[in-house]
Structure formats: C-alpha cells, structure tokens
Length: 435
Image (cartoon, rainbow, N blue to C red; front, top):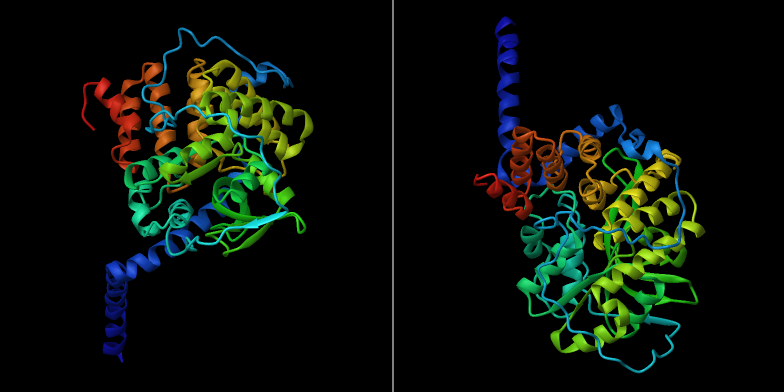
C-alpha cells in the first residue's frame, strides 16, 4: 500500500512535467497558448477592472470645458517637430485632383461581390491582417491574413495596427495604390461602394472580451454594400460573420469613435477617378481641416460618449495640423467627459489605438501628463503591457525632464515589443546608442 502511495506521489510531478512539456510543443502551444493567456488575463481584469480607471490631465483641473465650433489655429512656431512622427505614412504625395462633373445621384442600394471572406479567429487580435487581406482580395490579390500579418503585426500580441501601416503595406508589397482619410460620413461610404470600391473603415465596437463581458474596443471592417430601404450597410466582419448588416445609426456613432477614418485601395489606373470622388479631401491638409470642423460642429450636436468622441476627434485633427495647444485643450475636454460615461460603455482601450494625446501634451510642454497618460494606459494591459507607442512617449517625456536612464529604458522596451520601431530607433541613435 505504501509503495502505491509512493508511486502516486512520484507520478504526480512527473505527470505535471509531461503536461507542461506537451503544452510547449509547437503544434499544441500555437493552439492553446492564447486560451491560457485569456484565462490568466480574465482573472487579473476581474481583480482590477480597467473601465474604472479615469485619467485626469493635470492642466484640465485649471480650466472649464469650453465649447467652440471655431477652428483654433495656434502658432506652433518654435515647437520642435517630431522626428519621425508615429503616424506619418511613407507614401509619396498624391497629385492634385482634377475637376470632374457634378456627382451623380446615388442609388438606393449597392452590393459589391468579390471580397474573399476571412475571419480573425485562432490568432490574437487579428482583425487588421484579416480585413486588409479581404480588402486586397477584391482586386485579385492572392495572399491571405497570414501573409499580411507578419509584416504589419510582427508581435502577435500587439494591440493595434495603425491605418498608415496598412497603407504602407499596400504601397510596398503590392501593385495597388492606397490612401487613408478622416472625417468621412455615410455618404462617403455609399459613394465609393456605388462606384465599385470597397471601403475599409476603423471603428469602435462592443465585443465580448477576455473577461467574458461585452466591452469597448477598436475594430476594422470592410464595407461592401448598403440598402436604404433597410437602412443598413453590409460589412465583411472578421470577428462576427460575412455580410453583416449594420444599421446606419450604429455605423454613424461607432465610426465616429475613430474620427471617421477610412482606407481606399485601388489600381494605379483608377487613381484619377478616386481623387476626383474625394474632391477637396484628396488634399490631406484640407482633409484634416474639414475633419476638425466636422468634429467641432458635432461637439454641439452630440452628448455622452458621442460628445467625448467629438472632442477627441477635434484634438486628433488639430494635432495633424500641428496646433498642439488647441489639441491639448480638446483632449482635456474629452477626458473631462469620460468620467460621466457609464462604466460599461467607456472606451477604456482608446489609447491602445490612438496616440494623438501624446503628441498634444508633449509638444505643449506637459511632460507629466504624457507620463501619467502612458502609465494609465499601460496599466490597462495588466501583464501584457506591449504598447510600443506608450513606452516611446513616456521615454520622450522622461528625456525632456532630464531622466535619461528612464528614457533609455523606455525606448529599449518599446523596441522589445516592436523590433525596428523607427521612432525609438531614432531616439537611441540621438543618444549615441544602437538599438
């Protein structure tokens, strides 16, 4: 009897070792690791709910929220330009659009065929590779999400792929052209679909997350149709299903969560047609100005989370115009509204996807707000704080405050999560160090 117990006692650790060893075999690990990670994070999020965290900018306490529908045109002279910026595309300048005939009336419905549906499941947060692959497939591109993924998402657990990274991939790796614009509206989507162009959008969504509850997150979709009679858009949604119907009001509010950003992909010979349909938005500077005005007007017409989006978008567009002081004030107002949004609806992952506040606060000399915002954002990631942008900007603020050791650590951590991340590489070279 004692021998039996002894064998059992010895067998348990051996069995554990065998299970652990089997788990790390590549075929098994690739299928189970993300489920284990989800289980661990579910426990941590339950103990420290990120939706309860509220970032309060230090400067925001000194002034009230100020509504305005007028564009602020602060003088950024004397402010060092970010070199290189985090959200600047490497694409070449587009030619000016040529004047075309007046737009023709849009049909009541349109639907494009030819997009090869791909889901994002089985991979960590893979909506960007899946949706870019789908958008490219319409133009007979033969790759899939696993071809795109390693290029635009080198860290499998990276939380976000920026629109400019998707545009750059198209320009560098295909024979197609691509561009990204902001401040679109429902008519923008309809106009391009009617002309035969799928529209890749970035939007907010409420999906069931690792806690098992529905929460706010960023998401890409390829929109391929619309139907005015039913009041819906038709989207190829990598998280849910193909041909998902999205009511117009839902599209309007959730798209607003990402500054109404859209990406167009097209063959080179169709560039003149695309630019003509964009009209004044073909010029990127004009597009930013128009988007800032759109956001300013929505500040008056929206409430709750939509007003938060409007203020945030205003800040983002003013950053693009290098009006950093005006942008900082807009972000202050957005964060001031954030606390009044019901916890279940709060966009607590916003800084995973959009980095405009870092630009605004840093180039307004508000370095402690940059550090506080970065740390608040990184804390929402619990045990997986792999956001290279947040480390980069905390490093920039630390360097500005004279903490060279802290800055060096942050730049290197940024690169550990995103090898070759150009802004961090650049800063290390300024310090006389190699990445």
